[in-house]
Length: 177
Image (cartoon, rainbow, N blue to C red):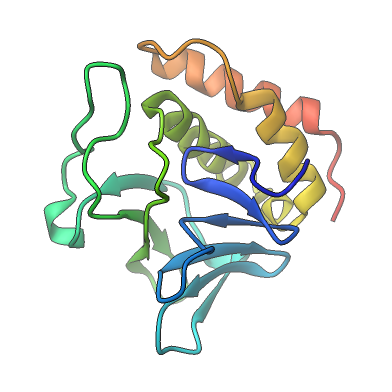
C-alpha cells in the first residue's frame, strides 16, 4: 500500500501505520510499532505501551477531553464522524492494571463511522486472539486494511463486524513478526 492509505483514523504515513494526523506539526498521534503502541505528543518524548500490556476492551471515542468522550460520539446523517475535537483510543493495561487513553488529532478528511468500527473490531480481535504484535508489521496491517476498506457505509451488526475482522486477519496471512 502507498502512503495515504487509510481506514478511519488509521493511516499509512512514511511507511508506518499511525492513528491520527501525523502530517501536521504539533499534533498527537499513535504509532503502531513492532514493540507496541507509541503515543506521540507535542513537546514530549512520547511513551511506549508494549503489546503484552494491552488487554481486551479497546475502543475509540471522540471529543476534546477523555471525560467528555464517554459516549461514542456524534455522527452525520451520511454516517460520518462529526466534530473536530480529536479522538481517544481507550484500553486497559496490565502489570499494573490501569485504564489508559491515548489521544490523537483528527485528519482534515472525514472518517466514515463504519471504517472506525471496522478498525476498532480489528484491534479487539487481535488483542483477544493474543496477536496484537501483528499491528507492528506495516505490510500485514496494509493487507488487513485493504480487506476492510470500501464497501457500503451502513449500519452493521456486532456479529458482522466480528466476522469481518476475523476475515481480515485470515486474508492478511499468517503471523509474520
